[in-house]
Image 1 (spheres, rainbow over the protein chains, first blue to last red):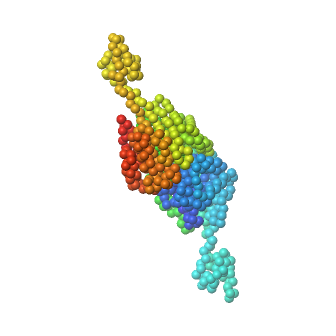
Image 2: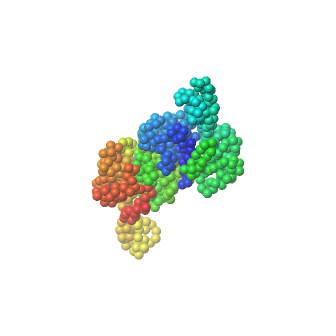
Image 3: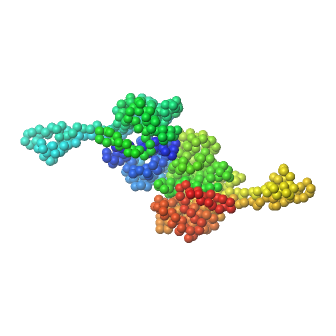
Length: 315
Length: 315
Ligand SMILES: [Zn+2]
Ligand SMILES: [Zn+2]
């Protein structure tokens, strides 16, 4: 799993930061990618990466403000131009379906793949399969705005096959039974215990990607024990009143969310253009006084999860 | 008048060419700018120029394909963020109003200026004031698509004020009468003829900006005697069949339009990504075998009109 930021700005694009888009690469896990929000020119950012639009399987929209959705129609069309044939599902608040469908109709956009749009009225499970559960909850913004929590299910332990052979387990169905956690009895009557030949299951990752929001309890709940929490930081301490007024958060509030949630790693994004690129590190440094493992994202930065859910930054 | 190309590609953006947008700067003439089409990320291109979105007075849309309109909502919103308060009018084919209004409503975009949207069902005069007449006509594309002809009205001659004084004309209303073309009688009975103290009126420019189209007669009519004609050239000779099939033109067809229209200068744009940047000059060179004054546009190039309607390229 790798999280690549394609847009890390707030409200409107600047030369340095485009409007919001975050790509979750699940290439190892499922050969696809999930996109969170899609500000205008997300497809232009993609042109400067190795990302393939046809690999996008799902797009999760936090809310309907233009800086989070105006890149959607162009990306949908280009996914066709670029040979996309696999289905695509968009999740988001009510209104996303009318807008996408109206736009496709009026612009005569031709899609070469099935497009599904699921609107959410209530918090809860958005998607679930054998690998992942995605939860959504309402945050506190000036319009209905969702946060998403992506939970990878427990990864089954690995069968230590050489060790099984040493213990006399023959090739065939007994190996499968052991891998599934069953103890087996060999032809000679000996019992081989699964725990001796299968490593313990590994906890999956939890990534929480929050839309625009004030400091709120729902954010903490969604981020509970998360491996990574992505929180907006449109403002800082000196402009905290503006943050509250416009339904946004400061870097310090984001740090408090991560701390209360006992998360492992915090990434700040949705940074106002009032902060010059050189000031980004100061935002992170200040947040670290509350929550140590904090990073400020910039466009194109990538956070890769490695073994034991450690994070490596690819810059 | 200066024509700056913000997007010169076809269908979808590439690293080199964004989707269509052409800015007509009328800063000397009226202190404003007129935009022709607005592909996604037009506002991002503007960030790398000195253009001010609040100076955009009119936006003319040729047709509703995504590569010509998907940048519109973001630009409308940013024009507010950036302090725009002057009215803005959008002209385009039927459907543009529903799309823009639906998008503004669903995205909660707040505009700080009056927005007018005029849909055209018939060819004819789109706009006229004391300076300009804008005509539109239907071209031949796979969806209804307009071409625009912007005619600057004749510029009145300049009063040679020192010469008028030499001939004994006093300061005051007689000077104004002469400037307006009237002959005047002085207190001493002498007659001063306007033609002796006012330079002859100057013809205005004619710029024809065509949307996506096959080779067609309406294009020639719209481009008649134009100072500049902007014609699409999605394909070239080797792919002329594809051009006809998809309602597009080749560089050679564009050259024939300019030739038959007896235009002065031809700019090719809407160049397919199949042509590498290095091939652009070849497209122009080939077109010049039919119509000498031909240029291929690229993103950010600017064509400025100087005295006697000559053109200077700012690259
Ligand atoms: Zn936002
Ligand atoms: Zn086009």
